[in-house]
Length: 199
Image (cartoon, rainbow, N blue to C red; front, side, top):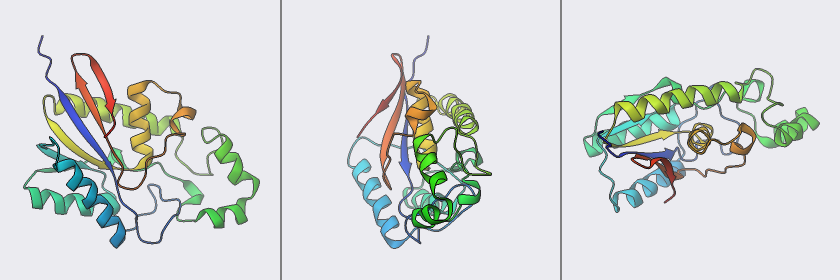
C-alpha cells in the first residue's frame, strides 16, 4: 500500500483592524499593519525550515484571503479558497468587544466561558456544526493533496477544531486551546497515522 506523507501547515490570520472583538463568519475586518507583520514573520520563520508548499488554501474572509492572495503571487503558488474554512459565527455577539459584552450581557457572558458548548450566543453557529464541517473538509484535503505539503490560512476556531478532530478531543476541551494571532502548527498524515506537530 502506498503511504505518502501529507503535511498541512496551519496558519491563523494576524490581528485585524479594530483590535480585539468577537469576529466570526459575520464580521470581516481587514488585517491591521501589525497583523500583516505578524503573518509575514510566521511565514518567514516557516520558510527558513523545510517548507516547500505546492498549494495555498484559505478561508474566504478578508483577514485571511488578502494575505493569501499576496503570498500566492509572491511565491508563485496556486491558491484555493474554501468557504467551509470560515470562522464559527457568533450570532448577536458579532463585532462586539469583550467590554461591550460584559456590560450588555452580564452573566450570560461568563456563562459562555464556563460552558461555550451549551451557552452559545443567540444566533451563533453550534460547535457541533463547526466541528463537523471542519472534520469533513480536513478529510477531503488530506485526500486531495496526498503526498504534498500545503499551507492553510484560517481562524482560531477552525484550527482548534482541526486539533480536536485529529486528537479526538471533546468539544469542551477544544475550547481550552489558545492559538495566537499568526500562530502555526502542522497536521502530518503518514504511515503511523495523523498527528499534530507543534513548531
